[in-house]
Amino acid sequence: MPDAAADRPELRPALDALAARFPGEVLSVDVDKGDLTVRLGKAGLIPVLRALKEEAGFNALEDVIVLDNLRTAGEGGKRFTVLYQLCRFPGADRVRLAVDVGEDEGLDSAVPVYRSADWAEREAFDMFGVRFEGHPGLRRIYMPEDFEGHPLRKDFPLEGRDGGV
Amino acid sequence: MAFKEIDLNMGPQHPSTHGVLRLKLAVDNEVVLSVEPVIGYLHRGMEKLWESLTYTQVVPLTDRLDYLASLSNNLGYVLTVEKLAGIEVPRRARYIRVVLAELQRLASHLAWLGFQANDIGAMSVLLYGFEARETVLDIFEEYCGARLTIHGIRIGGVPHDLDAALAARIRKVLDGIPKRLADIRALLDDNRIWKQRTVGIGRIAAGDAIAYGLTGPGLRACGLAWDMRKDIPYSSYDEFDFDVPLGRNGDVYDRYLVRLEEICQSIRIVRQALDGLPEGETSAKVPRVLKVAPAEVFHTIEAPKGVLGFYIKSNGTDKPERVKMKSPSFINLQSLEHMCKGNLFSDVVGILGSLDIVLGEIDK
Image 1: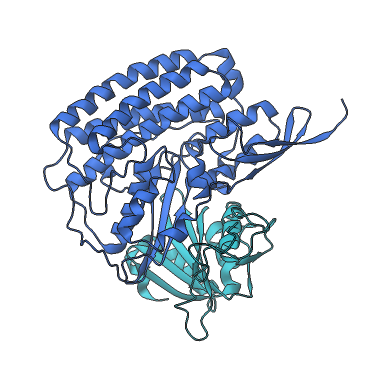
Image 2: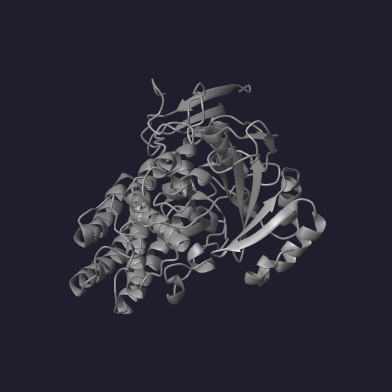
């Protein structure tokens, strides 16, 4: 385990336990500007979420954030990064999980672990087209059902497309 | 009467949806079986737009999210940029921000109080609430000239100083509010009709509230003391003495009590900030064109509606690579169905009101 946890001693037990239990899935742990980020392999996402919630007490999923790496991914890099922002209440310790996912692959839905992931994942799907397998009703949330494309992708024009919505 | 499921449609143009929100309801006679909120009518693609603007240009656009608490949006965004760029804000500016943010909470809660009472049928409270809110908006107008989309907080500090004359005016307004609150409480607290429409209505248990991601007064009405001003203090909140009001039952009535008590606590905080206002600069030195080295941060504040968060990723230029807003109204609306199931159809409006949503912030 990298020594990133030195900045956040209160989180060390949880991180050590994670790294020990999922040796192949925890790719890196960084602390930057006070934020803790754990990069995971795709297969490790749900087991790690479950362990963080049930064993380390991270009881709240605050947000699901998608990044489009179109211009930054480079050769062999994956198109999207999905971030899960978790919080432990009380005390408000935070951890951010990061998982890379390609354009034509799905990611396991976090809804069975965190009920609050429902709308957040629908938003991620609507805006970026990231598919969440096992989501109870994955459909657009902002845009109309018959809208084509995903507006927050870097290759979607800012001024919209001809004809608009 | 035999079981018969009927589908009902509320909105998107409905007087009590506080914007353009559509609710697809299934009811059995008067009892609600399911509620599905349909949103997106106000979607302006703010996050997309922000990627094309400089860090500074984004600030006035955040006014248009929760337009009943624009200063809170300003603060949430600006603090995240400052965390990202490592900008140290002078203490005087931090205190002025606290004054502004707490006055904004007051204004937001007073507006909510008026809307909520009006939704339930207590018309006169709407006028009392708005009359009190006006006095707070007058302060904002005197501070920077705007009342609704205020843009009163800038990256690095605040645009104007808070002079003795304005401080005296704020104190005068604060002195007047408890009297107005007492009038409103005399109308509602023990009112039989008010209690019938709110006590035990729209209940949510603490465990469910956390699972659904509920934050703000709705969560605290369940008895959970989760308040970012205490848990992850920002902008010098740790230097002030205030309580986090809690409810017990997690129903509409407790949400009402929690918000009323929060108004009193906000008054306490503003008075302390005015008394202890430190001397010094009102803004840090921020480059005219702010370029931020590649990094990513997430930061939250306790906005009037709940926990407002911003995630910003920078790429070395003067424009953000990605800004994601964690909107409290969006997340809170998710728990509407849970709160409405099994309640009467006529209570849906009251429960929706008790969530205190603003569609500008839900649709982004």
